[in-house]
Image 1 (tube, helix red, strand yellow):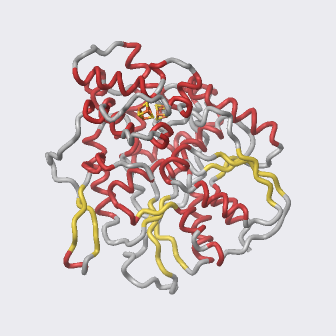
Image 2: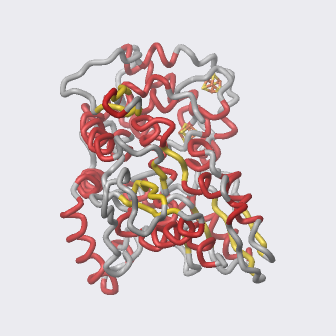
Length: 410
Ligand code: SF4
Ligand code: SF4
């Protein structure tokens, strides 16, 4: 797990005495001010060793200092201290950052790159505002009713849309609404132990098969998945685009919705970081949770070759890549081909696949070439953004790993 201490100013934990010591974070008070380290203070941790450069996908694509983490840190500091004025080229280099977390994961000095990036993007937003597509994505993430109506229309129109307007794949037909029939504290009518699951915003439209799969897998462990019915947004999409006020609001709703749950499973690796910052150690990656109880799961044999994509957020934030590998190793006769085109990122990067689809496709293409040559029958990826981005470029089915595991469950 990355060291992310400074970003916890988004929400502070509190004790609830009436719950006998249950720890729950409280929503941040409106107008609350926390001690936030400046960009310059965070940037001063960088000793400019350059060890992060070989891990950076944008530096691999364009080997320029300004496309590297070290260059972006220096740029953010120069902007923040007034040493340099923002330029169009500088803004573009910052826009190119994929927020993949690779640099932070390898930094020996513990530089909190993500905190620097978030803060610098907040300043960028003040200077020039968000783009049109970013604004739409943020609105839809935060407004489930509007999102449901628009995705229903998008699904109907999809067969007639030109390729340029098919920014994301066709949503599933009328996905079952996530449900949470009773509070998790109440004993379940079916006798199974209820486990809270964070559904996520766009996941509501696209993760229905993954939710069904998780329900099956948990049932095999004597548990019942309990989904949040409002499909709350974790706020990561807003925070990474510099709208920290909106991110705090959304995170306050998440904190309230899950305040009494001891465990909250997270299906989307891209939401993991924001959830952990607000709900703490109660957030567990669904694959990690299953891997820890895998002795109770039995999988049916069947020769098949599958391709595996390990999203940046899975490797660098949720750290559930090992759990996924161990679960797949339990499936008899399965051959797994891990895709790695050297860039380390598929290019989806939150909303970058919407804001700059051509550049995102440049990162994706080597992975698609590997996939095409792998002979795999399907591709698995645990991040909803990566999955949508990859699925938009291939006819080979792209699934959440949970779907495959549930399919093979005996
Ligand atoms: S961010 Fe870390 S790894 Fe990269 S140059 Fe600075 S100190 Fe070195
Ligand atoms: S977050 Fe990823 S893309 Fe951005 S600077 Fe770090 S390694 Fe490069």
